[in-house]
Length: 332
Image 1 (cartoon, rainbow, N blue to C red):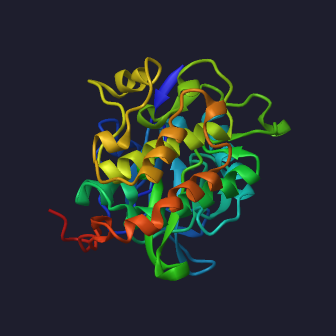
Image 2: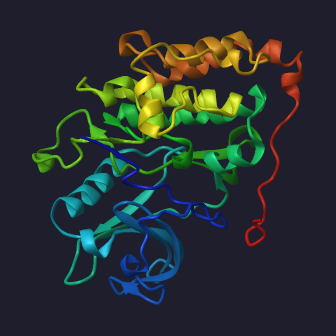
Image 3: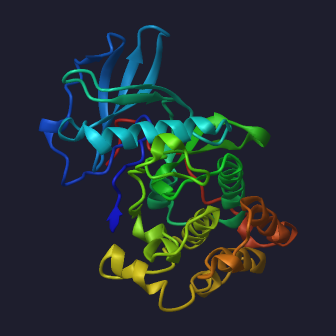
């Protein structure tokens, strides 16, 4: 079974969440609610197929947090188990480029199960690309390096993300190494442990969940899934960053996904001829249909992207395509 977007990326503070037809005010807790006698809901941020995300204030620690809870009509059984599963996998990973998850709170009475995580400022990579179209390679490189570093950290803890996409990648104005904004990978809603956890004997994430535009061919079929599925998704994201387009298109997301089973991915240079060859080769390697032909580690992808750095500095790729996001409250 293949399901699309069962969980949604948390919008950054000040970013308008995408409208979802399945969202219903009947499933959203009022912002005046207090959960666990501790978390005061401040504002609703996003609605997904299973969950709601709020900004909340933790009165115990006196800090703002993001709070993700199941929709009221789904807070029992396997849905609650999946939320707890998400927390356990996310907490395995401690990395500056991975969203920090704090605590899980099981359902009590009519109150839904929920967990808390860090609240990010900034915008998602998806919203940045929607705003600027595409990035010059020198702008894309530090973002790509941090995504690859996040994946390396996730995979080192024997976890496969399985839903890597531009809406799950955040660009925080918090300045990191070299003055580059911090890049954060979030949303472990459909992540999977490579080493079985006995608490997941009836693993509710086993169906083929994910986002079709970013799913590896083996996620669309009955093939085994490991870290190389995330490498494929990274290739789609790299292609999207430097071309402003997805490698496969179709009338529907699933139709576009099916095309990757029919033939090889297009060259990024066929869309934008100024893309350096080193970048084009790295993307094509990530998008190989056969997982054995892809880079076997995320750090190898970053190393291949840096091969053409000297050439970029002598070309028009030096021109920045980045611009600050629209201030909160001033969105068109």
